[in-house]
Length: 164
Image 1 (cartoon, rainbow, N blue to C red):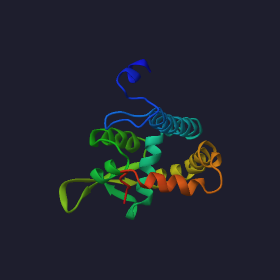
Image 2: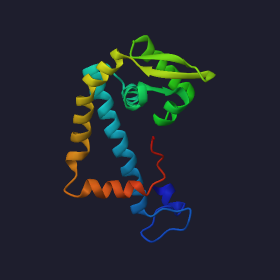
Image 3: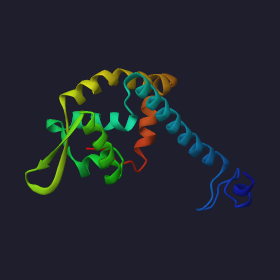
Image 4: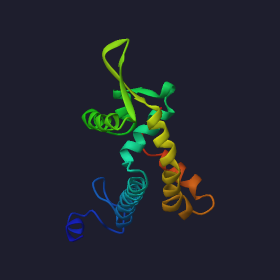
């Protein structure tokens, strides 16, 4: 903390464009810790109960919600916030497990679709109650009446790109 104070980043009064107040820095760190805590909890629960990492659950969910249970790899990478190479490695693992298939794009010889298999849909159906329980216990149940709407309104102000 001394370094931050020496750099003028934490003060009780309004900071300049490059600085943060104590409260601003605390809120930022709380947001980071909350996100890490919740995702670690969800990851652990999904792994223990279903042998399914959180990133895999996210891919399966995106495919299940897509028309014909398929998305172009580039579109899927954007929705799950992975690089194309990171998604390729994940899809390789999901394909080996029979949860996802790859199909060529008829309109673009270079394009590939990731397609949710019946086995992948079944695995997603099994894992979803665990995922939803984790969201409820680690986030939603901790908020009071009206706070969910308030959190949504606050987050809507942030430059978050929502998946289509």
